[in-house]
Amino acid sequence: MSRNNILEMTNDIQAFIQRFEKKYGELITVTTREISILEDGNAHVLHKLEQIAINQMHLTHPKLRYIKSFKHKTRKVEFMRYTQAFQYVAFTNGFKKGVIAAHIDRTHAAVINSIKQVENYKFNKCLIFSELFTNLLNTIDDYVESISNDTKRQNNTKSTDVIMQS
Image (tube, rainbow, N blue to C red; front, side, top):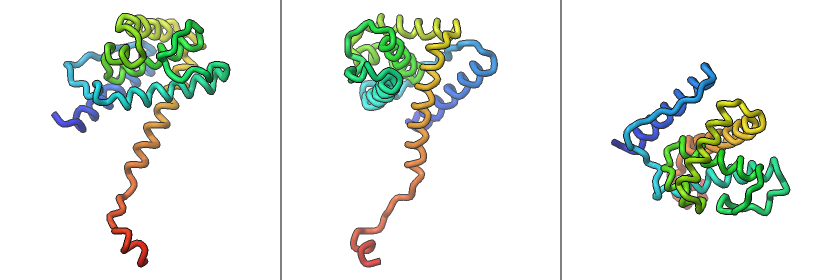
């Protein structure tokens, strides 16, 4: 199965989950057989998700600007909510719990706990977390859309000499 087919299937599943949760207000999890393309080879994707979440945290809580990674050890509630949201987003986008744990220097049990915490926040409709999570997802969507728009540009196949002569 090609990488593009897997990516298209993943996007379809995510769109279905979002439509279902929006329509019925219920949290669902869709399980498929193991076809994840987001493994150790795509650590840059996980790192980018982390940076988006960290930047969002810095915008909302400027006093936490000293934190540059979720490897940082602190029990501040603001930090914990963002790291939990990051772990949940990474997991729902195909990363394994062990890969997420290794990336942020935690155990896979800590990632499981974080995912459960986010599910509890969503189930109980926690306003503080809902706002944080919505802002984070919107920021990720904006980032992904800007990448998608960039790839629609046409490649310049002319040599530099031809361009200079025009």
